Image (tube, rainbow, N blue to C red; front, side, top):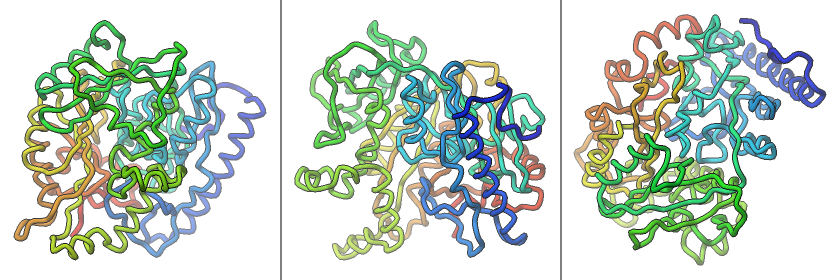
Length: 478
């Protein structure tokens, strides 16, 4: 299909025309930078920041100039769609759509995740139990392939194989330059209930009922996620959109969102947030990871500038640690071994959730854990699976997120904790996301992430191997 920036809506209004003109200029710079990369060099992004936790391939060759691909191109409130450049952050995307009372169907938790990154990788959030994953609300994608062409991929067009193979390809088939996505209407507030559980089996059963009924105790549920502190203390956080006026909480100051969830009563605790603050409720403290920087200490928090209480700043601190191994040096001064980074999101079928969490709490000394149920959207598309991350249509899963480090054990192989997690997830018929360290062998990796389908896509859209292949890019290399 030929690239068509204006789609099928005819002549655009001035603002839309201006947005697409700026986007065309950004695409031109991208193509010029592609042509400047030597033929024997891997094509990569000239991008200093990343939401990946695994090491990025180093190269002295110039990278792709994506500086002109960071804007929302156009929002169509009537059609509830948006055209968005691939490197646009969700923070900027929500800022452009929310004034119309619209948001993407799934908004990942951290502000600097890009739309293109959430589609070529995987994003998830508390709407995923009803709206699936971000790539499922994409209507069409313009992709710069490894061969240097920009192709428009749609569910039923000439490049439908690329459309369905792009999710979880992590830039190994190409990079998105424009995505047209669906939006949904939202109300101004979210009413929350924090429901405590003393038993993980009961928590699992309640999640399954909510996914099926879209309600709990007679109230509609629009948002669903949860937190596990111990096997005896876990919570589901249930959200309902509302336009009812009333006081709202603010977790960008001294109060910390995940701590607000905890309570002793067996009755649900209630809270309210403005929709904007609900969307970004996890970003201020990067879930609970800001505690590693002392930010949750009240004395330090008072002194920590508010504009730096956000995931993008914590990322800079993490980058410094990776560069200078600060944490390991501090541990060494205490006589402790180096730390193994255990930063992962995995999915297991919902009926195996309690089993996995119990195993994890027994074997891996990390808490809390984030829970986020998901199910592919109920649409015709579910009959045509997404081959590089093949979740079963109609089946409910739970994403379990854990982000910390554990002490290494002398004599254990590199990545021992991560390897154990991979084995357990495979045993439970699950998958894990590939944004962090992976240790799979080639055969198991191919079985889990596309196999022959990926090989054929690679031959068609990157015949000269200008881009790294998925195994080389995703799996921890020694």
